[in-house]
Length: 86
Image (cartoon, rainbow, N blue to C red; front, side, top):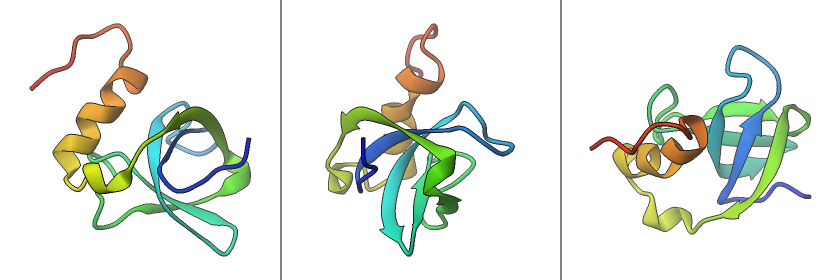
């Protein structure tokens, strides 16, 4: 599946391997990804598309305009066995 803006993706390589992120934008063969904690929306991480796995989940990124909202969205992916914290 092709990676697009607003898609939730999983990192397959690097120190952040196995973590989920939101694709904030795509540019020149790279995805700029954020998780709201380690990588904030103001400073997304540039990641090679070949180092990411797509999921079927696509969201409207305008609804997740704060790091807190983004963390809550990704909580179920990164911590599936734990209830969402406030």
